[in-house]
Length: 165
Image (tube, rainbow, N blue to C red):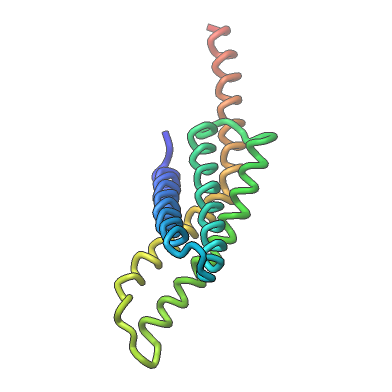
């Protein structure tokens, strides 16, 4: 049975995956509409970034489904975990900067911009979800290693107790 924080970790991964898919679709539509325009080159970096975000969250979901609660990460799975961790760290920093800029522009700018003020709440929520996932990413490998050790201890203990009866 998973504890609530780890269930929330999985939910936030699905949420961030959904956000990445939605932004990728919007960017793809913008790229197609701006075909042949210099504007397209400005969309390629965010497109690649959100594609990486999609991959990282997919890896997190795959690892949480495949290895939780008590299978240790080894080999390729550990490499995927480290790759996803690096991407998550980069996106956590980028989303914090985006939140800062959004709050600064909408609440503290000289013109008192109110046109996009409603976007601040989702941006800040996504930033908090991103940081939650990133912090828990650092704990995944050690938690799985510890749970595997406990599982093996319980297995050995159950073998010993059933043969002595």
